[in-house]
Length: 428
Image (cartoon, rainbow, N blue to C red; front, top):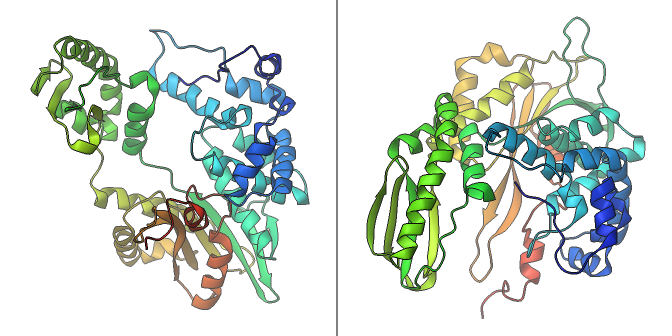
């Protein structure tokens, strides 16, 4: 599990921050050098200062210390699920204590602070704060903050709906009044990555399961591949419990095999590892010499992943219409295949139209990566909108979408940043 550490000379302020959880003793992103750096991503100093005040309300010292839990260390009896739960809580606040990013700052986290400051101008929202402190609910709360702040930036009136519709126990999230005669209720849904994608990310990224291949010759490439049964089980949520039971043994076997290969100078060929998989050592391509790659987990086919976009739409449609207003679903997607999502959703609506009678339109938002000659890839917000009744026109729904999708200070690599990079300018 990642832990906040401070290298170099002893730092009493840092020690006090970790001991008390009071990250505001020294706010790293208000350091003049960081302020200048963050300006490249569009952050102004006043926005960052406002973000600090908002974060103080959501993550005061006691709560920040409990979430960071910097003194906790796993042992052999710690389950993977417990480890990952701790890691998720730690990540909620680690961005307040320091910047561990080498090239790209934690843009989305700082953007959350900017959005919170905008939302809290109307008063502190305890429900939002509580959800942002809960790893299981933080993603959905973050998206609600984005949509709320975007609507305010568009100049619209926003009211959080706190009272469920009578007799139902269910409510939408926001009431947005765009103009005289045009108001809508908005249900905000964040589609988190699927269980198979999350599992793959955890195993490939978390340091506890990284495999250190030391001294790989520059003319070699090493690839670590789990066995077929393990690889396929990772793509099947029903088998995840079994898969996670196998992971410690798989990791131990791979590490032992890597040590043997290192001692032998990484001989070319496929090297079978009992109970784990195969380690392949092949001649290196010129640009990737001395490298290691890992493939431990399979994922569902793209068509199956795209079908996940249906569930949040259906859930939004179960909320009864309120005061006769158009009911709109705003759904944020991970980077799924766009055309497959459209196909899956349209087939679902055509198959079960009666399930969507309370929904008058939807906005699916995603991020598109754009590639242009002579530039690094950059990101843009993208939306798919569709009306489902005559209660809101396609033009008004598009207008609503344009106001709600463009979350500033949230894209890791927006076009504005790429075009300012000296190595990202167009070729002559």
